[in-house]
Amino acid sequence: MRKPLVVTLLLALFAAAQAAAQSPPVVTLVKAARLLDPRTGKVLTPAAVLVENEKISEVGSPAQLQAHAPAAVRTIDLGSATLLPGLIDSHTHLLLDVVVPPESEISRRSNGMFLPGLLLAITMSPSARVLLGAQLAREDLESGFTTVRNLGHSGIDGDVALRDAINAGRVSGPRMLATGRKLIAPGAYIQSLNAALAEPIVQQEFLTIDRPDQARQAVRANVFYAVDLIKIAIEDDITPAEASAIVDEAHRQHLKVAVHAASFESIQMAIDAGADSIEHGNDVTDAQLKSMRDKGIFLDITPTFWGGSFTRILEASIVMSPAMKSREAAADDRTRQRSVSFTQRILKSGVKFAAGSDMCWAYPGKTRGEASAFMFSHLREAGMPSLEILRAVTSNAAEMLGWQDRVGAVEPGKFADLIAVTGDPIADIGALGQVRFVMKGGQVVRNDLTVH
Image (tube, rainbow, N blue to C red):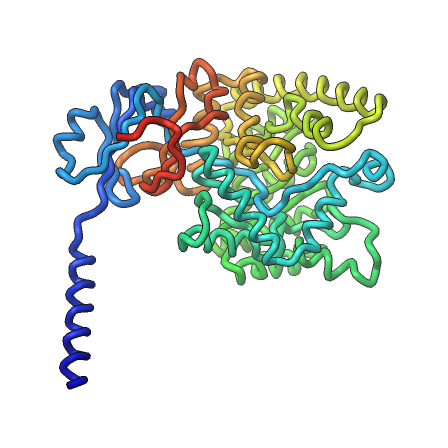
């Protein structure tokens, strides 16, 4: 009696599996008053996007796509909103949420603003740190960042684990590129630790290099954890031979290399080594911009703290003395002046560029996504046209990541990563800081607009 019953159950399960495999795709029709294509600047009015499972199948007018849609189509009507491709934060640190220490603590040690929070993060258990990253990743996604490139400060493999959990659907977050541990010279970021504890602490966060063969080994150590790219920090302390070895080994492993470089010397070393992107680039010269343009090296601009945002974080976090307030105000004025010149030279140079938040600070009263979105208004204040800002965080960023076939535009074949804002982001780029609708891979993450 048992054998026929088992056979019957197996046949039923097989039939159910066949039915599931043959079931029609989930089809969604998203309608809005406008669809803005950042690459061309063209606006489709009215607009609709037909989504099958996780990909875009067609873009056109609502009437056209309604005629092509199946009878069981799910329709999402966003009314007068403007549709855009999902945003890309090409430089972030999702497993770091530094709390500003008191002024007395800042002044008593080298790198006192950043170091205490970094050390506290390193001493967290890996599981607790990944859970923190999961929260910040969700907050990024809810603000419209559907793709991010996480550039270090994640423990040994925290961002890799978070990426895999997101991809598996276990937690909610943007598509992620993970770098694992950042490659640095000895003494960078963290100095003068207890000698008995220093090496294990540093190894939890960084891979240190002091000769070319060790540089290659560091790349391979990250490859072991299945990273998506390599991040190296150059502060005039890495040798040209070491930088070249890192880039050569990474490219041999089919990985791109992002280089933290701010000074003239470190930027030149990154250019000579053949880096794929230079992060920050504060002191870049016109000659270096031309060289980067000719070699196809991206400049990844990090403007989040240009407009006095860090001073606002300080004001919301600690009690500041009059002297500290005066120093920060003077620094903000200098930064505003430099950022205008910096931005205009980039635009004139023709270099490829993207923009990332470099956000790793706890901003009281703001989610991680809300804090990261300050970079849009700061770029506009520095004179960058709204359309160029949109490109920097969509199509340009997608190309820099090597994901231009997946994200960065609303077109057939790409992932259905969509956001919607009220108003016109070309007229007011601040609209990107108030995203009202988010879809990632055909799944609605957030919708504060009308749904039918």
